[in-house]
Image 1 (cartoon, one colour):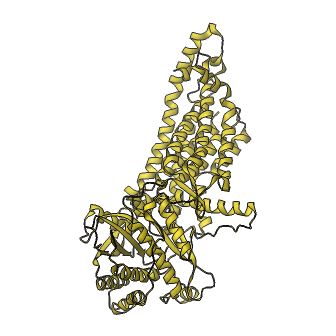
Image 2 (cartoon, one colour):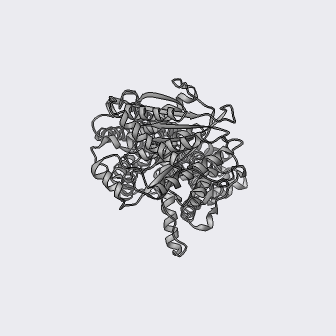
Length: 628
């Protein structure tokens, strides 16, 4: 109550008095400070050297043996099995049969799983086949397991047969050893992330799998595009909703790969050299951070490791970096013929990296827990912990809160903010009458806009054929129609005849919306900092800059609306398609459809946030800009 009445000259605590006095001047400096904080993160001063918190893993403390003639023969055995399965009715059956026979020949307990999935119920049905084999550890009772996974196609839609070959060689190597304390699961899918998700659901009690092991402690996914040799490996670790593997796993893989002379670079990006200028180092770190932020915000990453993170399984993907002039890669792109196996030294280096990683993970006495689960990585083998980057989100939230406080205290007429003691009772009565008249209408506007957001969220799932067929123009028209209807409904509420008492106050509406966005961004920043920053950039920043001036002239309103149109979801969707190089009629790879599929299958937050926060707040900002 003190907060409500302090704007009307009532007695308040010293903190509220200071807030009332300086809130008008704090919002924009705090906003600027948050932007500066984000821009400072790529500097080396904010980063720390990577280290191992879990000393029991002892990375690279063993003699690696992968790469013998028997291991190479097991890799070639995959090609022989594929040739024997040439009479299979389709490619998926042929590949599954070849892998199943190869795993059986190595003594693994193997099983084939057939599945089907849809992007949303009733649309885009696709079938696939998973094959997995379990190597039973001789020194345990199948309580814990490690996993190596690969898909038949890479994220760039190339064949991933090199990874399947390497997996067969690793299975041969692992079957020769007696020191395993955990089972090792080898999983091959032709359904990408959907195949992995289906397998994980079945493995964790969904039914349909008979060959099982224990709790999966960690997973390493492989992507090896056609190439004669690799310049290194790209390391990808981002999950769907901001999930990250324990930092120890990332550090250990990078350390082992460097010792094996085939370094694993974050996102395949090599750090700037030591002789580079500070500006070049800053640009390189900023590029890497932007890639991580975009991957974590939209939930799109290279590899098939993301579904594992949803089940609290620490996982990452190692992807071979192909040189632009590689002859095998160029031949595959021109002919499409299955490539030959990479050079032996490359296979040996990658295989020993995975071997040494398995040996380290085999030493785990309990689940990863000692190192960070919240971090961003600005350079290889360096990290920024949550304590160093979360203040930026705090400053963003503070800028919204202080402006909301100022607008709440400044709502209504000037007579209600007088300090004259003689008019105290009249001012309080007038203020309560103002709130009773305006606040229900303000909440009503917000509720109706969000109701349309709920319709946008539910309709593609409830009536998929109405939205997800033909072209992306359907999504554009659908969004624009809802926007037009909402604008007509709510602008009619805001434009009242001047002689009648005003039923909605723009300051009150903006203050309530800012409180809402501040709560969402603040809570989201703890779970997914990258998505919180992006959400603030498309909702909080335009909201703070909407109607900066108290008096709204015609030109200022036009400028505000133009800014909000550029920040609208429809404009963002068009720009994202242009940035991705997608055709306006290519709906199969639309960001709209990608967000919807990730929400339905993996519980990604991007799509519901677009429907329930981004789109409604953008419309509410337009209403604030157009109000008298």
